Image (cartoon, rainbow, N blue to C red; front, top):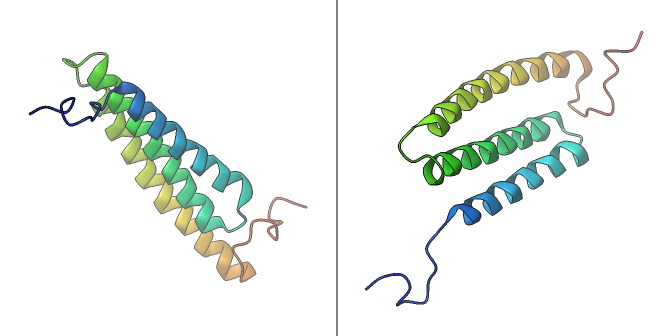
Length: 111
């Protein structure tokens, strides 16, 4: 018994790319529309995970012998972890001085 006899389609490259595009769009919407700095950081993490899905899918379906997509995904995860640590530290410092993490209320770059 295989997938086609059950009426199911096998998961292909296009399915992974659609999932990646939807996740990236959700993350982009969150970055552009939300005002809470913590939510913006989480949406950036969603965008990075969408890129990881695309990298691994391309690696699996285009060049299955080489592991370039998986290696790049590991680098993206390392960068995401560093971004999260630094971002949370910056947000905590801003919260201590302004008592808010609303990005519209921040005026640190103004003279």
